[in-house]
Length: 172
Image (tube, rainbow, N blue to C red; front, side, top):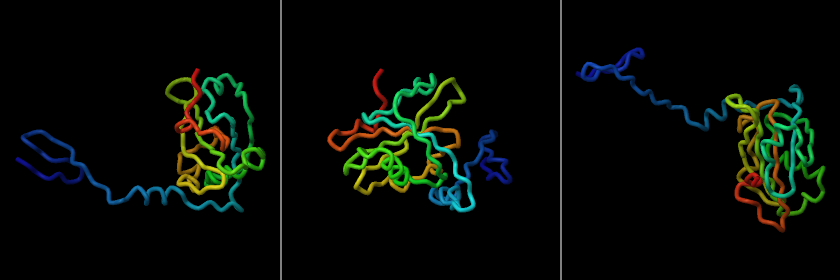
């Protein structure tokens, strides 16, 4: 016996109940557009973004954040959740003139406190390059689920050195 379920009751197949899958007609692009409502920068207070950078092409180790002794430069940037990776790249280049060279590679990662186990976790979110347009240029903090209180770790690679694959973390 096969009966279509109504009101979330499911369908009956051979005396057993089985839940029916409901297919959504909302696309992922529509969800992203809905979540990323435009931010009025004149009316919205900026957030303090703590940025840690390296110039060796590798991200920091997570235990460096746990111990509170990140060895490289720390920047504090006031920005908004709709800030793009290209916009953040420009702000970093203002502070580090050596990063202005064409072909310098910037690999971005969000560092956040792991609620399930002690310590920090990292999520690589994209990369940009000085002097070139890229697919990640228009990616925003908001689109990558950045939350106020997270850190941004940027692995900077000079143009004369190839970046490690996806800006991976340094080996121990």
